[in-house]
Image (cartoon, rainbow, N blue to C red; front, top):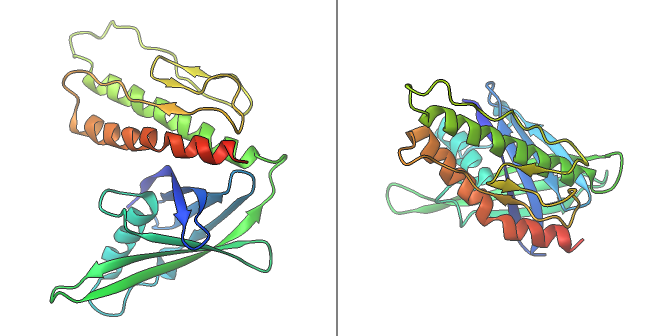
Length: 228
């Protein structure tokens, strides 16, 4: 099943280095990953047939869902571990692992590795800015969806704001709940919040939780960007 992209911060074990990680899944089950250390960006995909579920005790489908939850930072995956290893061609090997509790109380570790190729943007830092701008655009779209879903049917005449489309290098002020400060740079502050009506739909509540998680990671995003 297709799942929308998420952007988060992960900490690689060992060196304790932080990275931005963006992950999505298309309708064919292919995962698309983008990894960024604030300056350099790597990207890659892994098809459903390339997954490495355990031979016993877990179906391929269950492993695919658990992997995606872990990569996207879903609730309950806080103990998952990541490592990032340099490859000879300037690429990176992203490794994910999680502990799994068996039915008889036994514990095992499930793993997945993904090879990521070096991306060469037009200028240093452009990859990070693209990631943040895409996330800002997606948050604006989610906010608009919730506004439309919660709008009373008897109020079709209410005017709706024009869609906001952030672009690379532009100065952004996205409504009253999403602001990127002045022109987006690696030191900019990203603040994300979702405005909901008193009676949001279940879909809105889910997106609100997701937006809150993004906002909670805002400090980490800023610290990584400002440390470059």
